[in-house]
Length: 85
Image 1 (cartoon, rainbow, N blue to C red):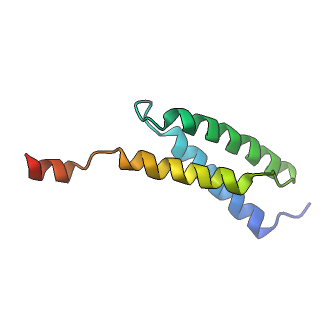
Image 2 (cartoon, rainbow, N blue to C red):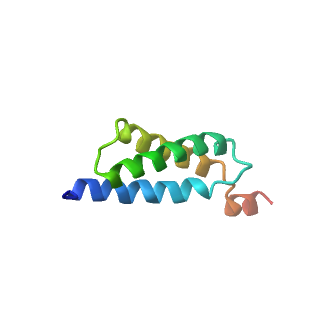
C-alpha cells in the first residue's frame, strides 16, 4: 500500500488535534465535546493507518479545530486583567 502525501498530512493533522484536545481543561465547557471528537479522530487515525479513508474525516478535523478555537476563547487574558486591576 502506498501512503499518499494527502494521507500523511491528514494523519499528522489528526494526531496534532488529538494531542491538543487531550490537553483541554476539564473545567472547559468544551471538554465533553472534545472527548467525543477525540475518540472519532482516534478511530479515523486507525482507519488511515490501515489504508482506508474514513468517511467524515474532514468534518471531524473541522469540528476539532472549532472546539479548540472556542476553548481558547475561554482562557482569560492576564494582560487584560492587569490593565483593569
